[in-house]
Structure formats: structure tokens, C-alpha cells
Amino acid sequence: MQISKRAAAAVLLAHALVLWTPAQAEPRNVIIFVADGLRSHSVTAQTAPALAEVRAKGVDFANSHALYPTVTTTNGSALATGHLIGDTGNFGNTIYVGPQPFPAPSNALVGDFEDDAMLGLMNQHFAGNYLGEMSLLQAARAKGYMTAALGKEGPVGVQDITARDGTGTIILDSAYGDSKGIILAPEIAAAIKAAGLAPAPPPRGAEFNGGDFKTPGTLKANVAQQDWFVGVATKVLLPRFKTEGKPFVLVFWSLDPDGTQHGNGDSLNSLIPGVNGPTSRAAIRNASNDLQALREALKSQGLEGQTDIIVTADHGFATKSLESPGSYAASLTYPDVKAGFLPRGFLAIDMAKALGVPLFTVRGDSVHPTQGESPKGGALLGLDPARPDIVVVPNGGTSLLYLPQANAKALAPRVVDHLTRQNYVAAIFVNDALGDIPGALPMSKINLIGSSRTPQPSIVVSFRSFSTGCADPEMCGVEIADSGQQQGQGTHGTLGRQDTHNFMAAIGPDFKAGFVDPAPVSNADWANTVAQILGLKLSTNGHAIGRVMTEALVTGGPPPAVRPFTLRSKPGANGFVTVLNAQDAGGETYLDAAGMPGRTIGLKP
Ligand SMILES: [Zn+2]
Image (spheres, rainbow, N blue to C red):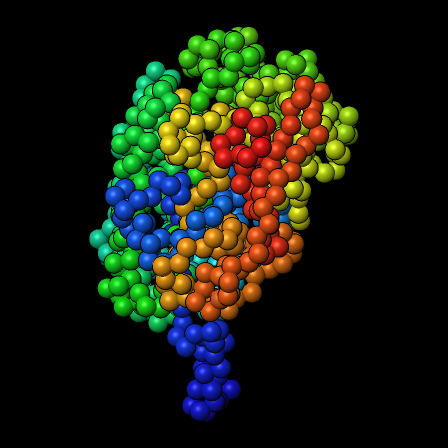
């Protein structure tokens, strides 16, 4: 078919209007910079100048919230889709995937979202797209934007979960090179080479080892690996976006400070300095320097004036404690645990003992704690590991419990009663379908019931947190967690304010300048706000959706009305109660803290 030049120009113009119309005369670009595990209060002009500058000159989201459970891919799923966790089904970094185990080589009843190959299995297992929603990057691509996600394995893949084949979004993560899960378009691989960069990110070497109970962990921030990603962004992607003349959305997921805070060797077995030592501080500075490099590259490409920069953290952080008097699990001896400390799988060990049932790994192998064995990465309880009564899935400061059999309703009150007797338990939430159980609040109150395609947990347990006594409890938070780190290293995952109070700030042509936003905001709000700025439409398969942060936008109005509230469970037989502090605003519930009074940082009883 022949078309005239004039008709072609009209088509182009119409296309341009579709692409550029929203509020602005010129197309907008967006960079979403995620500083993994960055606490709101850990940013100052001295510790992290580039991060502090965005917050001071742009919008300071002082009332910011990570979503619960406060772990990486959970928040990554909300950043990707604008939906709360009840919809995304990304209930933790690790979830139960049964009733059938994943195929070999996994062979387990649990799956891990921080793994490219596993993400593929999750999609296969859960209707082609485990999130059940369109992602922001997918919506942007469909409207002609160039899209890319760089950085940490897991949350990067989640950003455009059905397009990890190298043809759409440019996805490049820390496992690229040895991962089979991510494919890079040949022209991008060639451009990386032409820019003088190594073909793949340098792996974190032996000097980044997390150590063990007798050996301190790393004393180095993740500088070299992140420099490679910064090189790809500044020398390959931004120039390419500029040359193509198309607008873009770029997600940059900085592994620091998270990875270094987790594995830091500053504080083995000691709660002070914990995650506030020199190695953790270097990791915060590393993330700040990376942001600085991206901003400088934007400027030198002449893209600064039409690019909004959003800076967020998936969650806060705490120093890990492994001391919990009264735990049966801690009274036993293990070859890889300091005497008297909690082993991996302590909750499962204590529960199996209390309920008098056998204990298995997630692959069905027997575990004998009295012989020094502990279940790592999850546990099955029951007579038959192929049909477990309870599946315990640790996610750092939170454990997810699944009761997959027909006896769930009868079993749940016994499980909750046992949990209320453990010193390490702060808050208990029970699936609404299991009814009202004394000591616990319903999961619907913490945004965990929605349209998820993955199985809903039956019971969610947040562990105890406390401060070491500094002036700002969020900055010296300590918490019990079931994870690979030692006492004195870092962790997160609870519903304490040290974990929910993530860093959030934004700067650019669409954001107010020098504005402190008093309204609550969360990681579910970014995608909705970016979609509004770019004129994109996200999917609404579920109903648990974040809000647009209109009050922070140049075109926006006053902050929304905010209603803070507190919920209390009925007391358990021993007086245990779960108390929740939250705020309602713009139709969304924001979770501040929850727990038995005295067991949670930031909780107002
Ligand atoms: Zn982490």
C-alpha cells in the first residue's frame, strides 16, 4: 500500500500525540533508583550526599512505608505493578508453591523469588505471570517507551516478569553471565563491549564472604560490581536512549546497602555497632555515589530537564539478634551455631517439639535437632512430608506458615497458641478464612488478602525487635530473624518501624521542589504515580492498589486526609495481644508497626 508523505506525517503526528500528550509538552523520562535496604534516617548530607540532595531539593517523603513483609521482592512486586501484596502474591522472598513441589532440580515445596530460574518456574506454575498484573515497564513499552531494569538478581527480573527474553525490556542483573534466566539482546551485549566494559558484572568475590559464627563477614562495600552497572547505564543505555530519541523508564536496583549490611564483618556476635559500622556506612555511600553518577550522566546527555528521578528503598534494616531465652531450639547444640543462640529454623523446631510432630526439610528429608540438625530455608511438619500439616517459610524477620491440609481450621488455634508463648514472636496474623483466633489479627488488615495467584499464607509471624538504646530507635534497631546471617550482622522483614521506614524521595520536572510530604506513602504508590505522570494505564485485575501521590506533584493538590488508627487483637490465653498501628489515606492502608507492646520498635500501645 502506498501512502502519501502527508498521510505518513499525520500518522506520525498522531502517534506522537498518543506518546507525548499527558500534561507535558515534551516527553518525560523516569529513573527509579532503588537503594536496597536503605533506612530513612541513615541518609544525611555527610553519609550520603547525593541521596540527601534529592530529598532536600525535591520531595522528602517523611512518612514513607515499605510494604510488609519488609523484604526485597515483595516490595519489588509492588514497585513493578502498583498493587499491594494481597494482589501480587509475592508474600515473601520465599513462598510455599504446593501442593506439588517444583520440578527438578528444585524438588521443593517452596520457591525463591531472588533467583532468575525460579522466577521462570513461578510464571510457569502460576498462569504464565505469577503477579497476575501488568507491570509499569510493560505498560511503558506498549506506549513506545524504551525500558530497562539493572542491578540485583530477583527484583530486577520482577520489574517486567513476562519479558525476560531480551526482546523487550533490557534486563541485566547481578547473575548475568552465569544465570540461565536472563537473556540480553545481542546489540546491547555488543554496545557493552564497545563501551570498554567487561561482558558481565564482576561477581562478588571471596572478600564479600558473609563469614560464619566464628569468622567475621565482609569489610568491603559492593563497589566494583555496582560500578559495572553504573557503566552500563551511563555509557550504554542513556546515550542509546538519547540517540533513539525515545522517552525511557529505567529501574536501577542498587544491591547496596542491603548486601553489605547483611554480610558486614564489623560486629560479629555483638549488637553494637551492628549495621552502623564503617562497612555498612561505606555501602550507603556506594549507593549514593551511584545515584550521583546517574544524575551526572543525565546532565551530560542533556536529559536532566525532562527526567523525573524517584529514589526509594525496598525496606529498612536492623541488626540481627539470635538470643531468645526460653526457646527449646536454642537449648540444643549445633555445629554451626554459637552455644545458646537460635539455629536456622528455630520456629519450626520449637513448633514440632510443642505439637509432637516430625520435622522435615522442604525436600522431605528428616531433621533431628537433638543430633545438631536444623532446617535451613524452610521446614515441613507432619507425619507425611508429601502432605505436610504445616509448612514454615522463613523470610528474615517474618515467617510465613501455610496449613495446606483439610485440618487447617482445627490446627490453626493450636499453632497460634504455641506462637503466643514464644519470646521471639511479636505479631501474629491469621488468614481471614481461618476465623478469629485470640492473640492474632486478620491478614486482611495488613493488605495480604487480595487476588493473588500464589497460595495465601495461613499465618504470618513478625519477630521481636528492640533498640540498643540510642537516641533514634530506628537507627539502632535489633531484631530476631530466621536467615543465614550471624548475630551482629544485618537483617529485615519484620513489621517494626526500623523495617517499614524506608528512604523515599523524588526530584524532577513533575515533582514539587523543597517539599516535605506529610502524607503516608508506600512502595505501591510509585507505579501509580509514574503511570499518572506518563499517561499510562496499569492493570486492575486485583483491587488492592496503591494511590497516586498527587500532593507531591507540581500539578497536584493538598495532601490527602489521613486517619491514623490502632487495632488490637483479642488476648490469647496467656494475655498475648497483637497491636497494629496504621494510617489510612487516599483509600490505602499504610502499616507503621505491629506487635505485642514492648516487642516492636515504633509501636504505640
Ligand atoms: Zn536484604
